[in-house]
Image (cartoon, one colour):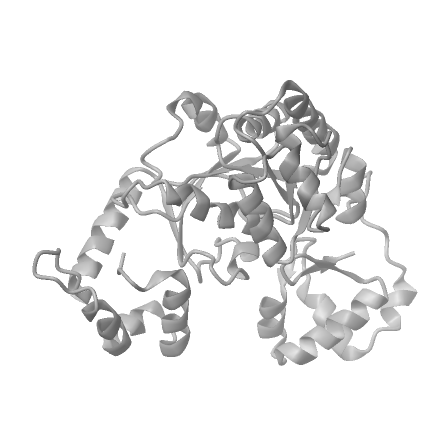
Length: 353
């Protein structure tokens, strides 16, 4: 809520002082930044006023059953945490794991063609065996097609909104949004009184890209939200897929450009996603031979012990739990990856193979 701070600036302050609480107790850097925005005609933006607004926001969230997830909250999406411009605070309403084993974002034109919608539906149907979480933006066209397909197949699906969670846009999609609360939900980084401005929709795309292992662009023109999302996914070192089309088709211009510029892999079926993301068709993990573990050194065995489940873990989380420096953790993980014991996932995440 503090003007001029932003998500990146806020993270730097938290890192400098150790916690958000300490930022408000120290005040020095915070006040310096806020002073640039002081104006007699503007509302008081002092630290006490900001804390008062925060208290009201917590009351609002409690009343409407909205989870407020700070960046250090255990339920905060780990994939998003590794994005430099990821939200300091994320608002969530729904019922699903925000750190699923598999997650993909599906985006595309608001004026999707019948061909594009049919491809979207078939793709999700063919990937359903892997039980991925489907992420999109609840917009017309490809977005709502992806959400609907996920709902019908019983897959968790998340809508990332460019507005506070007390507003659903477009209103025509509220009935689908309500169903998503049963197995999925709504995400936003906008507090309840945040202004509704057009740029919000472009800004929210960083969450769409950052929440997933891969972004799939079904149809897109040369410009638009889908191309922004794809570009962000590339910046986050996530996989990007694009559906090719005829050169003369306006809705294929964006996808063809992504493929031609090598920003995206060509996709014509679910097999492409399974291959690139190393998803096993039968969904089963390979059985490890006891002899393989006997060959591991003590440090490798200690790191393996941290993976108590098949859920992915971030490298910094592994480093903290093991009590060893990040650089050494990365070296050990590389050795385990070469031995086929762990898999390296997008966003510096790892899981047992």
